[in-house]
Image 1 (cartoon, helix red, strand yellow):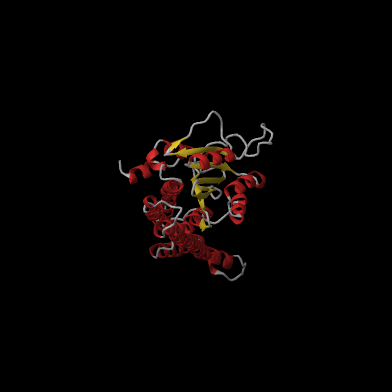
Image 2 (cartoon, helix red, strand yellow):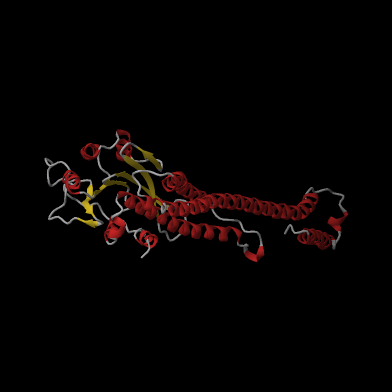
Length: 372
C-alpha cells in the first residue's frame, strides 16, 4: 500500500463531536469540573499505548521521555489557566500560547526553536432550504497545532472541526503514525483542506441557483426583474469569509512542502505539496466565486434598472393617451355660448369618435415602437 493512498485515506472530513470530559492536567483540580483536554495518548511505533485510565499530559510526557514515541493531546477551547500548565510542560512559546488561547487568528505558520505553530481555519457548510438575505452559508472554527519532536498538541475553537474521527483513522494506520508528529500535522492539514473542497462545491450550487434566477427571462420572454439584491450580497459576504480562511493558508503549506524543516519528516514533507495543490485550486475557485458574484450583482441591478425604465415608458405612454380625452373634456367644459358643436345633434358622437380614433392611433404607434 503506497504512502500517498494511506495519507489520503486517513484524512477524510469527519462529523463534529461534543466536548468530552476527561482527566485534568492539574492533579489538584476538582474531578467534577470539566476539562479542556478531549484526548491525551502516547503513540509508540505507530500504535497507541493502551492504559487503564485517561493519561494526564504530564504523565503522557513522562512516559514519552522514558520509553520514546510521541504524545498527542487534543484540547477544546482551553482557558488560560488550563493551558498554562501544558505550555510549561512542553516549553511552548508564550506568544503562540497567547494566540492559541485567545483564538480569532489568521491562518499562519510560525517556527520557534523546538516547535512549529500552525493555525488553520475550519469551514463548515450550513445546510438551508432556501437562500435568503439572512442565510448563514458557512461557519468557521479554528484548529491550532503545536508540532514538536515528541509531541503534537491541537487546540480547537468553535463547534466545528472535530478531530476525533481523524485520530481514530490514523490509529488504524500504524505505518503512517510511525512517522511521528509531522505525519499528524499533514493529516490535519489535509483534513482541513478536504473540508474546503466540499464547502466550495456546495457554495457553487448556491451561486448557480442565484445565477439561474437572475438570468432566467421573465414572463413572455421579457427582461427579468432580477432577485433580491440582499440575497446576492449575503452570499458574497459568506464567500468573503471563506476566502479569509483559504487565502492566507497557501503560503504556510508551500513552506512546509518546499523548505526543509528538522521537525518535519522528509518522507512526509513532499506530501504537503499535494495539500498545497488542492488548496491552490480551492483558492482559485473562491476568487472565481467573488468575481462571479460581482458580475451577478451588477447584472441584477442592471435588470432592475431596465425593468424600471420599462415601467416608466408604459406610464408615460398611457399618460399621453389619456391626455387627448382630457384636453377635449377641458375644452368643452368651459361653457362658451358660441360653440357650434353644442347645438349640433351629431356633435357629441362625432367628438367622441374623433377622440377615440386619436387615442387608438397613439396606442398603436406606441405599441409598434415597443413602449406598450
